[in-house]
Image 1 (cartoon, rainbow, N blue to C red):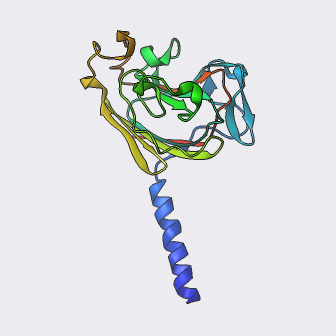
Image 2: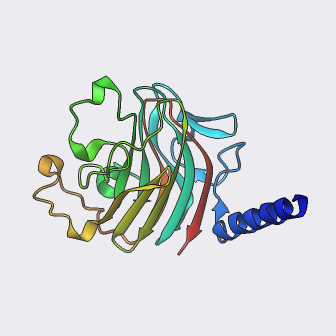
Image 3: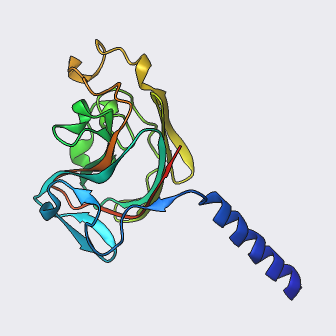
Length: 210
């Protein structure tokens, strides 16, 4: 019985190790080494990157990425808003000049009840809506994985695929507000966080080049 349990634990550890093969941590849990942008608007809190309340702006990795998978944990306090900058050029509004901004949002907050469907958590902001109903209650940690390959983006939230789309197929005449998205077809750029004046925390951030 004990031997069987030991083998099961070893197998589980081996499986976990294999699943993390090729992933590299991009945040050391202590400071913003390797990050650029308005880092003064963020802080390290209990080993996590935290956007300071009332502050924001996009911070991003010094390194650029083409195709990649990023895994991280996200804690969204009640009513909070942020975003993941995908293939960000280093300046400007990542929702438009980057490939996209993947929304990070407390979907259940009353003040967000009447948003466009393409503004909720996991959505390619303003372009493609993510499936709702898989965020944990506000204030709890969520696990998220984002795969960016060519013009496609896949978002898995707490084990459920909530977005799987090809941005090359997006009709810019039908996007929210019919705003231009000059960065939509970018093939590489930085990864980062687009703070919007709310406290949101990110930890255990690791990335794998494809």
